[in-house]
Amino acid sequence: MPQHLTEILNYPVLIAAIFICSIGGTFQYGFSVSVMTSPSQFIKELVNKSCVERYDRILVDWEVSLIWSFTVSIFCIGGLLGSLVASSISSRFGRKRCLLVNNFWAVLGAILMISSRTANSFEMIMVGRFLYGINAGVGLSAQAMYLTESSPKNLRAMVGVTIATALAIGKFCGQLLGIRELLGTEKSWPWLLGFNGFTALFQFCTLPLLPESPRFLLLERGDLQASENAFRKLWGKKDYSKEVVEMLEEKAALQSIRSCSVLELIQNRTVRWQLLTIVIVFFALQFSGINAVYFYSFDVFRAAGIQEHRLAYAALGTGLCELTTSIGCFMIIESMGRKDLMVRGYIGMAASLGLLSVTVYFQKTVWWLPYCSMVLVFFFIFFFSSGPAATTVPLPGDILTQSFKSAGYTVGCTVNWISLFVLGSLFPILVENLGNFCFLIFLAVCLICGFHVRFNVPETKARTALEVSAEFDRMHAKDKTSQKKNSSKICEIKAQETKL
Image (cartoon, rainbow, N blue to C red; front, side, top):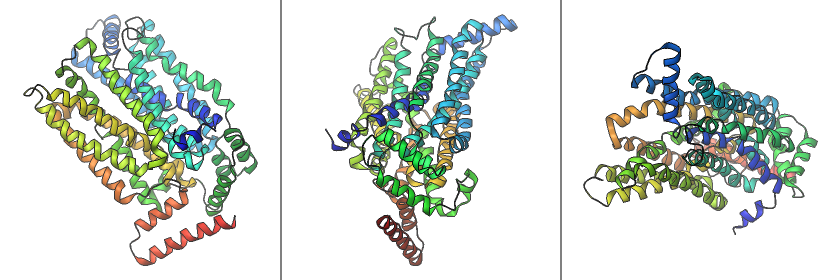
C-alpha cells in the first residue's frame, strides 16, 4: 500500500469529513448531470399530458423537445447563480455553515420533483432542477474550500481528488438507479429525481458534527484558539504546528489585505496569470469533449453489436470506468503531482479524440473498427478522470493566497457553469453540422490547455500558496530586475519560516 494512502488512514475524522462533504457536494452535481437520461421519455409524456389537460392542446415534437431542453439546461443557470453567491456566503458565514444551509435548496427541489407527477406539473420539475443547480453551484465551491483548507499539506492533492471522485460516484449512481430494475420505471421516476433530497438530509444531520475550516477560522476570523481546536478534532493527535506556522506567516504577509471580491481579483495585475489559468482550465473541463464522447458512445456501442435494450448497461461501464480511474488517481496523485497529471491527461485526451474521429468515420467500412472505437472511448474517459477531472476543481485553492481564494473559486465555477450551458446549447448544432468531426474542436481545446499548463503553471505539490505565487512571478517575470525581486521574495518567505 502506498505510504501516503497509509498516512491518510491515520486521519479518521478527516476521512469522515471527506465523505460527509462529498455526499452533499459534488455527488449532487454528478447525480443531477446523469439522472435525467433515464426518465426522459416519462417526463416528455408528462409535458404532453399537462398541456392536454390544462390547455386542451397536443404539443408537436419540436415543442416538447424545446421544453425538455430547457428543463435540462436550467440546472446550469441555477449552478451559475449558486457559484456567484458561494464566495460571499462562504467568506461571511464560513465553509461549514455555507454547506449546511445549502442543503435546503436540494430538499426543496426534491419535494417538487417527487410531487410533480401527482400535481401533473412539469413546471415543478423545472423549478426543482433550478434549485438543484443552486445547490450544486454553492456546494462545488464550498466543498473544495473546506476540504483543501482542512487537510495536511502533504495530503492536500489526494484530498482534492476526492472532489472529482464524489462527482464520478454521483454520475454512476444516477446511471445505476435509472435502470429499469431499480427506479427507472413509470411509477418510480419521481423518486429517482428526488433522490438528491435524501443525500442532502444526510449531510444536514451529520455536518454539525464536524468543525469549521481551520484556515478560515485563523486567516479570516483571526481566531487562533478556534483554529487549533478544529485541527485537533480533524487530525486527532497529529502534529499541526507546522500548518499553524505557515498560516501565521500567510496572515502576516496579508494582514493589511482583506478578502478580495471577484472584480478586485480581475483588476489585480499581480495574479493575472493565476486568473488566466483558472479561466482556461475550467473552460477546458467542459469543452474537453467528455460530453461528446458520452453522447457518441451509444452509436459506438450500437455499431459494435450491443442490442438497444442493453445500451443503458453499456453506459454503466463508462460511468464505472470514470469512477475506478478516479479512485486510482486518488492513490497515485501525491507521488506524481497535479501538473503532470493534468498535462498528461489533456495530451492523452487529444490523442484519443484524434483517433476516435477516424475510427468512428470509417467504422462501417471495417468490421473491427467499432471495437477500436469502444477501446478509445474508455481510454478517453481514463485520461479525463485521471487528469483534468481530478485536478481542476481544487486548483484555485493551490495557486491563490487566502485573500483571493474565494473569488478564485467563484470565477472558476462561473466559467464552468457558463461553459456547460453554452456547450449544451451548441452541441446539438455541432453534431448536426460536423458529425463526429466535432471531436477536432475539442481536440484543439485539449492541446491548448495542456500546453498552457505545461509551460505557464508551476507544480503545486508540497508548496504553500505564497511559494506558488512567487513561482508564478518568477516564471513570467519580464526582466532580470523582476526576477531578482521574486528571488528575494522567496528568500524572505523561507527566512520567516525559519524565524517562526
